[in-house]
Image: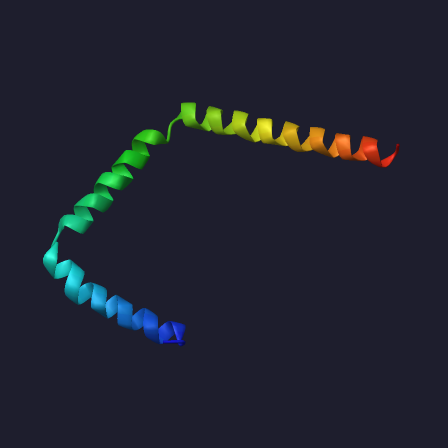
Length: 74
């Protein structure tokens, strides 16, 4: 059980035997639905929102750094 590669192979084999036969084809459908949903999420609006979020975090860390530096020179 401590050998990660051996356990990975065992779990993979167990997954193939037990899960796939019970829900044959449904897993692929769910993955397709998931990735199709991701495609609709990725848009220029999301990119703009992501850039604004990064800018907000950048400003937060700069302000925090300036506050620490101001207290250090006190």
